[in-house]
Image (cartoon, rainbow, N blue to C red):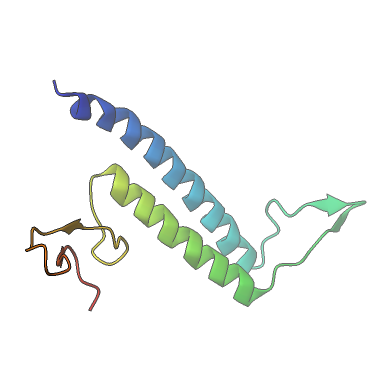
Length: 105
């Protein structure tokens, strides 16, 4: 078994754990958006803050996107527009390198 094949299992498990954590945080924000009070810190029985619906929806969307990217990375998927790193193609020394990779157009 190649070294890269051995490391995929641990990387995948850790990345899926991160995706699950982010998905749980997104679910908590969706609960707040629906009017729930799950895990809102309190002081003397009063909530320390009241998350607004726009903020809760925005954070839930961002956390869901991050969880999706984490899960995709764990499963070996590469999102076409999220990663701008690519390999330069061989080109003559007089010209700048042309980039091969996904395009976001």
